[in-house]
Length: 108
Length: 238
Image (cartoon, rainbow over all chains, first blue to last red; front, side, top):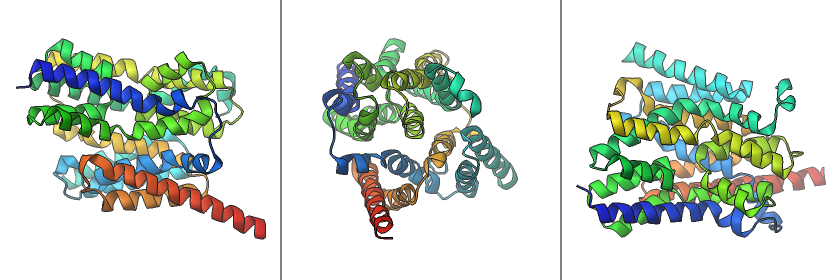
C-alpha cells in the first residue's frame, strides 16, 4: 500500500522536476545564440535518443520476459525499412503492425 | 504531401500527431488500471497523469512506490527516466526559443516523446517556418495526444479492465517511434548517430536508473556531429 503523503510528494516533486527538465533550455536559453558545436550535436538528438530508447525493447522485449522474440524483431525491421523507403509514417506503422500480428499468429 | 502547404500549421500538426492516438489510448488506460490496482484513488491517479504527463516516468515511480522504495530513490529514478526531456528541450530551443515565455512554458509542459519527434522532424524539413507557425504546429501535434492521455487514464482508473496480452500492445511504442524516425535519416551523419546510439544502448542496458539511455544518446549525438564535420571537411578538400 502506498502512503498518501509519499504519493503526493512524488506527484508534486516529479511534476516540478519534469517540467524543469522540459523547460531548462527553451525557457532559460530562449533566443540567445547557442555555440555552433552545441547546435551541431543537437541536430542528432532525435535520431540518437529515440533509437536508443527502443533498441533494448526490440532485442529484449518486456512482454517475453526479455527473451529475444522473432515476430517483434522482424516487425521492427519491417517498420524501419518501410519508413526509410516510403518516408510515410502511417505506411510504416501499418506494415510493422501487420508483420507483428501475422508472425505472432503463424509462429504463436 | 502537396496539400500540406494549404493547411494551417495547427491543423497540419494535428494530422501529423494523429498516428500516436493508437499508442496513447492503450498506455493511458494501462496507467489508470495499474495506478488504481496499486491503491491510488481516481483523483490521485488523474493528478499523477496531469501533473507529471510522462508515461515511462509514471510507470517507474508507481512500480518503485509499490516496492516501498525510499521516496528519494523513487524521485531520482523517475527523473532519470525523464532526463531525455532536457535534451529534447535543448534540441527545440533553436526552433522555438524566440517565442514568448508563456508559449515556451506551455510547449515545455507539453513536451513528450511523441510531440517532440513530430515537431522536430517537421522543423528540420521546413526551415522557412516562422516561430509562430512552429509553436502552432507543435500545439497541433499534441492536440490528439495529451487530452487522450488524460481521458484514458480516467477510463482505465474507472473501468479497471485489463488489456489482453495477446494484443501485443507492448510493441506499439517501438513501432510508432521507429516509423517516426525513419524519414529523419537524411544524411550519413544521421545514420551513424543512430547506429552508435543503438550499439551503446544495448551495451549499457545494465546501467541503473535508465542512465544507459542518456549515455547512448550523448554517444550518438557526438558520433553524428563528428561525422558531419568530417564529411564537410572532406567535401571542402575535394
